[in-house]
Length: 272
Length: 269
Image (tube, rainbow over the protein chains, first blue to last red):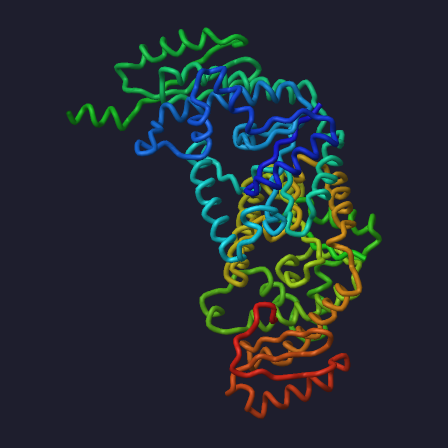
């Protein structure tokens, strides 16, 4: 029927609220345990996959950019496939960043509530907690900007933001459960198709990222548009490769490849 | 007995939400009336007050404290109005003007830019004009909040609840806000009423001091007014005269003390 996506800087409270809301609504849950399943399906190292969701690509951290984007893409494909099943509460998988505006998906950000934490930060003084939170936020913002060019804390990404400094977790569960019951959030054919298009684009991107870089994929009503860039002499070769690889994906109605000139490489090559 | 502030950008349906919330909770509702009342009491033109609460300080205003004086007037009236409880305020900067009252439910209504432009166009503006007006207004609000309160109006931590009106309808948003207002944290207990009254007393005392002594800090607890001033300020005849006026004008003040040489506490007004 509908999907609830939660995001928070406070993992402990996020877990607690998400679990209780799912229980109350009778929805399935999708959380970080899903990484193991994804790693198994794509034969990836699950620790590295989890790392990819935290760190930005870095040669020193042994996470090359190409691999990093592929890992992210695997998570995106699998999460979107699960969300198509509806009636789900999803958190801890960065879904708020890649699930676009879809009418039956409610995206909620939970902020504050650090005084309510039972472990770790609960005993620290306020100044220290603020410093740690600010550092975490900076690192998350850096990650989300590199991965999806979106700031995680931007309220424009969410349909609702609940501040847990005043609102108790149980009250937040009440609010979320009631909100999910609004008729506006019921899944419609149109909104389901939107999500299916998003999932299709993610699948195409995933197969392309195995061998190519610099790929953007969009889908609408089964028509997939791949945008890429390369030097002029490799244009036809790259387009053919994309068409050949993308053809493996099921569900594509029509495939378009948009090519842009890679000015930087072109300039560097002409200088040589 | 709820106190709710609803903050919103222009053409974000905030007014419609506020009116419905007030009707549902049977609360008084006000926005511009605040400036009207302030203007009447302190004999300052409404336009000047509106400029003080809306526009960011210009180059010359940064070195004078006129904006601070007008804001003190506005806050004194607002805290007086709020002390009675059962109020929905959807005017400018409610979340910042009442930031010292924890039981106030601070709500932000957001909407995407395209939707806001469409709504503005229904007032007879062209698309470009509507977009420019909205962006200019947002920019002014941002600058004002940054300069006066060092805060960003888009920072969700300033609010208890932020609702996007594009996803939820006005009715859904109203329902959400009313449910949230009924939570324990936002109940108007006797302690909250006392806090509101104390804050109102502190701001009313500040009104008398702010013109001549803008950096003085005031706290009030259980009617005990503590004024934090410098040694130099406290020994002037003008300061002593104002203290006498404060005592005369505010019968609710139980005790008045002046502290000199101490740092101004964070909760002081």
